[in-house]
Length: 492
Image (tube, rainbow, N blue to C red; front, side, top):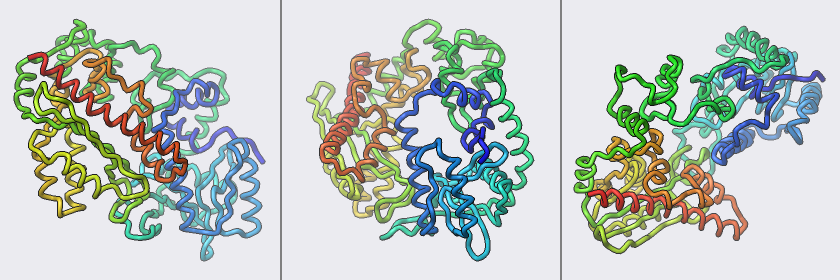
């Protein structure tokens, strides 16, 4: 069995950036650490692929024991094909120094087709390139495919009872489209193999390709010479505009010429950084404070979005609220009261979530959130799911006020926010003693993945520790809002 230089993933990496491909093969340990959130996305893809096997049950799985054993899988695949096996999972092929493993290889009714499974709810250009490479390698290995299908998740599917995989998954034939990409595949393979056989790191400046189609995991290496307060710390402009400035030789925010037509938001950021000072629009802050009516509820939701719906009446990637934290103050100098809700794993949390939320916010008062669109969406969705609570939920929505407004509009801006008005950027700038770093769960994506993992957890001690960590994280979110508002009030 021939050796290989490229795999599907490394080929696609080379399409994005040849320098990234070279670094990956020769300086693997310099990769940026994979976040728990990103790892959960990888795991989701693996799990969706395994679930899709049930579309064609009874196949032979040739997944190797380790990533270093794929040559053995390729040999086994050829053996199984020779013996007439009709369904192979992770069928592996090597051709032209490229290794690919297709999720399902199926022979049915005299036809042979490959199926590549994706956990997303749509088909991207990258998926097409992935399929085109696999088609090229499989065909080069001597197996002519009658069809090539991309299998992805149907967001319109609503679960009722047992999962219906034929409705959960959409199968789309892409063979005619990907065969038109063969010439490009061949050329790109030549380029990538040349890169890998060279002894010099390719010259490649940073650019939009560092983020498209995916954020590169060598940004820490390639961007190490970009200093703080660079034009990449400007919020409110896209990457394309940032790189336009960079390619004009403008590296630092302070170097942006006054003659350039800048938005008010960018001017504020530049002023704050150039003078190393906090910019405060006192009139706007005063107006915002006076627009709030005590008593005040400080509210934060957490939700998770299972790719495969768990509860009846839900669809793939639907926001399922499972937790909230609520701080309450009757007046600016009133006693701080805290209430919270965290659903039990394994049970549909939506009805209980809605009932508890309505009970805890029954008394009058504005409901303060951070970035109101999310909380409003959750309440609107709950009002659709449970019409009996619609009027009460609509009433709560009418009381929502957004603490993010002064920061989104740069009415309060500190250089350390680096163009962001997210709570995780604002809090350390205003209240440095209240930190997420000391928590087990540090951000919302991690909270979502943690709760989703609880659905199958059986270790009672781990469940208890995880629930404590979730409660601590969500409570910190609303406590942060309390402290931020207190600071703004102290300015008046």
